[in-house]
Length: 434
Picture 1 (cartoon, helix red, strand yellow):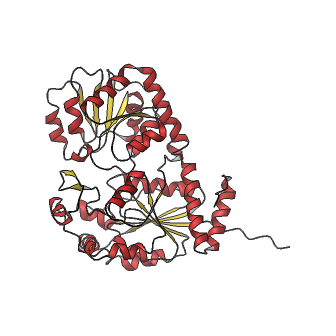
Picture 2 (tube, helix red, strand yellow):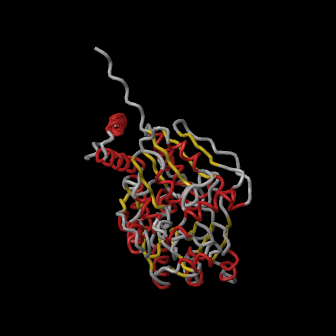
Picture 3 (spheres, one colour):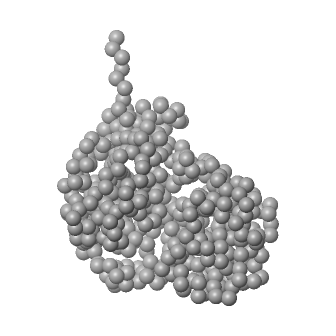
């Protein structure tokens, strides 16, 4: 009797504009963590990203690629005209100079084609390429906002469309394709759109995106789950709360610093740099309990988190799912978060912190966590427990494979179903229930 042939691994293409080291924010970092998690689960992963976009935005040559683990192959797209390539895609909403290269890569027998930040790697037009289960994760609000962040005129939260003037305020050319119905037509190629938080799905719905979005939690990679700051000496002589992030107006520190007077029982440490840094330093002038510590080496962040009384999360715009929250929870540090965007959901699901709405409630939360060690430790432990369950890599992979299998069954892609089932058996995870 012939032995049954082994089932080939699930093949996944991840398509994104930015990928480390050609990366600016959390979306590229997330995609890299996701690629590595899929590889650890036994998938064959190929990442396709557009170095032209990074070169056009920085005016620099791309740095050398980072090493990748077995199971992950990275394709860096580049051309002789990076600015022209990025500008054409930004204007027409389709890959132009890189179209043939992307099409050839996606025509390699993938089970899943999963786009992330598609803004300059091909816009909505990239969704039509390749034949597979197709997913798209919204890492920002690009589907409904040309400037990605629903921050109108670069000065206020957006509550109605004025996209032409707003693009000019951001010094970006208006995107002509957004008035042609292109996004709605090309979205038909995508099986499911994924939202990393409830607020993301709600915002897309409010701004006219008609497709339902599948909720799927973010996660802390398995190789980053162990607390690293335990036992590390406190990096600051007084009790402190910590902010980690870019110093931009949308991050909301201009509301926090004025409330941080000498009566508070903790200092404020601000880790990061950005184009709003000079204004924030001027705002903090004369405040001996507010300290700007600049860009911090990632290796030194765990000790900063671990010894903080709380992480301050004060964004004025809609954060999709900030990874700094999970990094703080990993070190058993609670959040003090503005009651806005994803933070209400994060604290509701974890019990890992306190919400604030104004200067008074911010001060109350800081005072409580700075003076009540038992409360601080209880909330921090709740957040840490949630990273081991709700936001673990195992949970993320289970939910992802369940979604892929559900779509593959619906579309009659029996080979993909078989490959998912083989992965489930090999991983020994619970039945997917679909």
